[in-house]
Length: 382
Image (cartoon, rainbow, N blue to C red; front, top):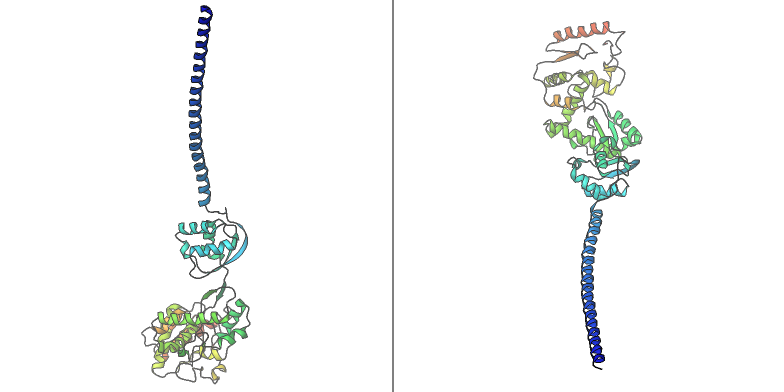
């Protein structure tokens, strides 16, 4: 019996010990499982945060990088840049027209280009889908401007202006002349005495498409006043200076002769001597050649300076700035006569006395005789 109970006791104890050991092992496993789970949660949280930030960093880069096209684009579109527009405003115009992919890309390119601020207002032909940098370059290239160009040479009269303007802006000469008659609208100064002749400055002008005649004419008048002011001509002397300058323009072939011709005009005026300028007669009796015929010299007109002393009533053509400068600052001479002795080169000789002038005049006659058949400009004085 003793053995039986002893064996039973031993067995019970052994079972209890095993049970306790299993419980301890379970507890250890639970603790490690919790640790592993906790670590996993931490790692997932940290890793997720890093991954999220990594992804967000790419998203952030995409959101700050402005859309932009590549290359010079294709197709043509017209855009209008208004005066005083900022880079932002220009970018908005180009974006709306489909020229650039985003306003932001254009503004960036505009800020990086030191020449961009010199983009001029006006109409432009640009390509669609251009890179922002190409768009800047295109706006800085005058060749891309959509503009009307009007060129008037020196020595032309109003009829020539009206026809040339009409040809460019698709008006009739009569319509242009009608607008020109409104002197207040085109800004003709009171000093002109309601005489537009000579007040449309000869030059090359550029205008935007759709320009009206009044803007063209007023621009030309304004340019004349600017030149007069630049040459230091007193406002009260504007009309007289333009009249003298117009005669100089028609009589002098070379710039070096303009101040000398002007001196002859003023010297004759000072002594009430007839100007006797063929150019003033040709203004009222237009015809071929620079010389007035004996018949033309008989014309009854205040512009006939062979019959009337003093200056004609107003300019006889549009003088350029060189002639205006000569009229404002004539050479200091005692010359009363001049004659162009070579109609090809424009060589001109001056004289203080009539006898000296006759010598020079014979030189012209000899040149005409020698070149009668070879020079279309050669014609004898009558």
